[in-house]
Image 1 (cartoon, rainbow, N blue to C red):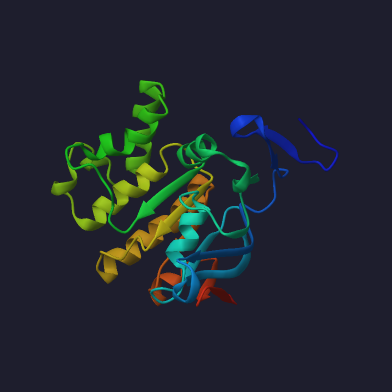
Image 2 (cartoon, rainbow, N blue to C red):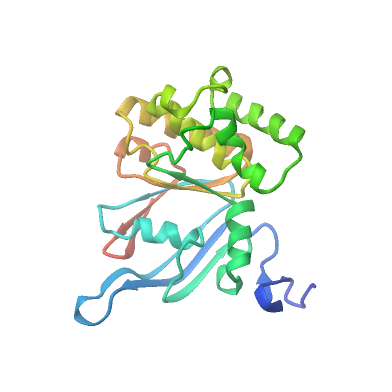
Length: 249
């Protein structure tokens, strides 16, 4: 349904119309976001009125010391948590209008997650790990095999497809995790300290790979990191301090 404002509507859980913005707007729009844990004098205010936009096709780094709110913000953007106040729009969709099924579909089809701990399934090969999201989507087996081969080649692991995580280095495991995050052609990549378990040289190589992936796959990436060397590879840097955005570079 097209409204007079130029926005389109989709159906959320329970038949509620979910407003979508026209194509071509920012990939991420955050408006006056608040999130607290606990109550009363002991409440922890993780986010205090955070607002920013992430244009499509950019690699944006999110920096800040431990406890600054980075992980909280990424969890909210990925639909893994809900804010106390404010608005989040991802790829034109207002997350507040989505029910649980809508959020599951968003995470499955439009957002790719990369974590510090890799999160690979030990008994599966590299190729099988990359293919898991497509199996969940019930993709055609031939399409799945072709996509897995392409992605392993993209991350430089075409010769390691049959190896299991325990047979790979930390850097190689993170490359598999990146390939898996790209399996369903997401519009947005969310990476929480993806180089935190890697040495400096390997971490830099992984960050350079993420930058190359943003260009080649046409995705947008928001990467939390505290490494100054890695921050230099981002198109833009946002700094979080005590729940506030304090710097746009």
